[in-house]
Length: 129
Ligand code: HEM
Image 1 (cartoon, rainbow, N blue to C red):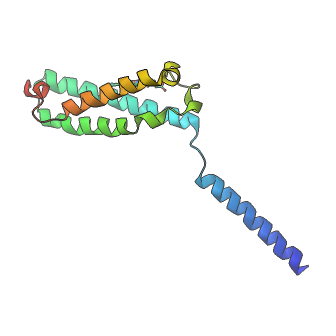
Image 2 (image 1 turned 135 degrees about the vertical axis):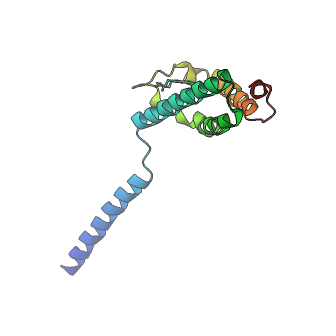
């Protein structure tokens, strides 16, 4: 009796342990990954629009720096935002992202390099302001 009781406790503990393990190591929901990458890209779009407005109004170039840094931080995480299980769903991502990894990496590297140029204080674009 006591043994059977202990066995049941052990079984319960194993189940709770497995559930905890499962939660701790659960992969994020693909729909959530898609949502977050789209939100991030929308934010990048808003930062770019704001920077264009600063340039056009010949505003303070320094006020663009936090926006550039926010975009850089987002793009640091960018390549990891396209796991294979996020090709379908509420996404406009083209299949080429998964079939043409070299093209995707080239486009990504180009954007990162362009943002790096924007961030330098002696950047000719910012000097135009
Ligand atoms: C300054 C640079 C960029 C801006 C302003 C920008 C802006 C945007 C915006 C506004 C969206 C729509 C988000 C939505 O669905 O609501 C988008 C989608 C997307 N962009 Fe860009 N983007 C930039 C750079 C890039 C780069 C470098 C790549 C790839 C190398 C890229 C790949 C994508 C993809 C795959 C989507 C579709 C995401 C999805 O629906 O799951 N973008 N972008």
